[in-house]
Image (cartoon, rainbow, N blue to C red):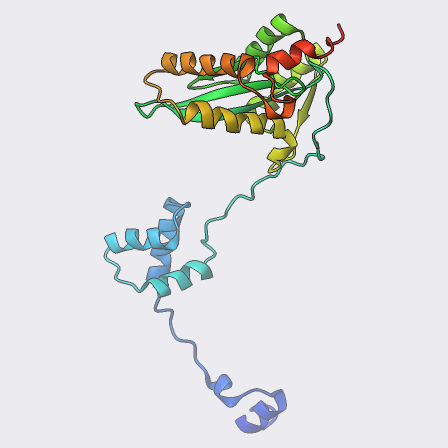
Length: 262
């Protein structure tokens, strides 16, 4: 302004600037110490939100409004980063018609508990055509190797299936499970995540299993659970009428069905 002999008013008008903006003098950051301590606390506890950090700062003698702290928290980009969940991409696997035993098996897990509060899991396996349940394996933990041992035992009794249908649990998607199916030339059908009705036959079985067995009994020990569940499985196969099989038990329907190809 001195060089061109402009007044303050003329210079601001030429630059289209408000005179108050020209005269403004920045104030010192009154939050500098708080900001410094907040950043230090966030580095020590990177998974804490601003409310948890407020408790930590209060322990250091800070008495600060939570809104003020949240504003500083956001200004410094200290928000906890949430990991985006990876979703499996599977092609749709609608249930197909099956016309003979061992054409397809379906399997899933069901959770329950003992009287002591200890959690147990049950691996349910059914033949999609005859609706027989060749095994229900019960334990506190069931790994993929345990799953394949159960399937090997069933195969020794009734032959191997052409395909096995299941969800995307870690026991069913492990490298061990994939290698086991490839070695035995068994197709492994994984349904789409969030689409349980693509495995509707075993879901229907699990509903009956929970209603008629798990909810109707209490289990004192793991062995007690195994015995009661095995009794129900035998009754289901040999005595319980099945509506989708013309109200005959699965074992009777299987005896009438054509023999699976060798």
